[in-house]
Amino acid sequence: MRPARVLHVAKVKGIGGCERHLLTLLPSLSATGMAVRLLVLEAGEDERRFVAQAWDAGIDMERAPAGADGDPRAISAVTAAIRRFSPDVVHTHLIHADLWGQLAARRAGVPGVRSLHNVMPAYRRAPAGQVGRMVGRLATRSIAISSFVAAYARRFRLAPADRMRVVPYGVDVDAWAVTDEERAQERQRLDLADEDVVVGMASRLVDGKGHAMALDAMGRASGAVPELRMMIAGEGPLRPSLERGASALTARASFLGQVDDMPRFMGACDLLLFPTLPGLGEGFGLAALEAMAAGVPVVATGVGALPEVVEHGVTGSVVGPSAEAIAVALVRLGGDRDERASMGKAGCERAATTFGIDAMVARTVDVYREATA
Image (cartoon, rainbow, N blue to C red; front, top):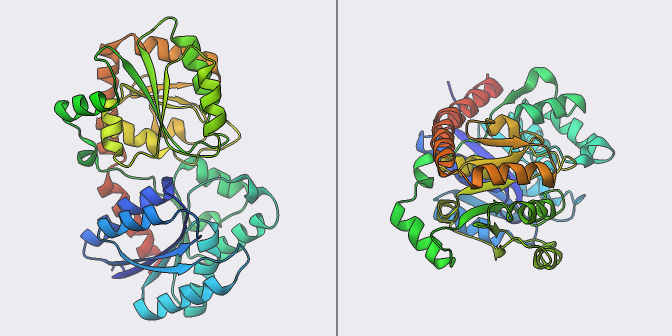
């Protein structure tokens, strides 16, 4: 028998891969008849956009201050939420919620499930490594979002191997469908010409995401394919320096800031570039999956879990983490409309079959069954 009530706990600041995953997973679990509630531990930084989107998605939600990293008052908030909701399972996300959520669940006698969404380098040393290993012992089951994350967790003993399961992110392909008319409208809004070949990027402007390398690659590729134009969605501390770097290159690049309507953005693109650097250790690469769902081929570096998502030569190109390798892929795909169309169609099919929401929900529910058995 599957559990009827699940309390999710997450510390939120902004909308990254974990938060977008929750916005998809929680309504989908609720649609199966399960009672699902989310406790948002607010970092006091940028949780407002996530909270607004969660309300819009109909997610049953509570909010509480997260406090500082070592502030144990968050455990009281989780304990109170458990008492009010009486869940069969407590499911936690990211290290702060993992620590306080799994401690509270153990104290309340409720089985705990914890999702590992990344391979942050801090897990390799104290104190984060100690916290990660302790949480892995507290949780009845741990979910890794990719085989890459699962291997990392085994290497650094972040969860007992027999308690860990791999459940990849899922995507609703229908939600990413954009009509020809909507594509034309969005391209007009972005001041794009019909002949422009738009290379999109969608990630925070932070170290490790490869924006500077992407701009370098665009500068190299634009000589061979002058129609290339880059559209960069996202905000972050590197924006001023990246804008200065872009102005020094021959590449045409526009910084759009925070984009709320991502399906329309993806629909306006001809390619998505995902140039993560090796040091970041990409745990999944959700924007790559979202592009595939939108029928957009992906050029990704062969870093972290990206080769698990993007099928090289079928749904895009997986290349080495260098401006030269990326430029070669951009020139080839940028100049071949038919290959882009073929890869886009294959990507949409892969997103629907390999990474569909139904499969993600079914695998998650299976983990809950194991946890409560």
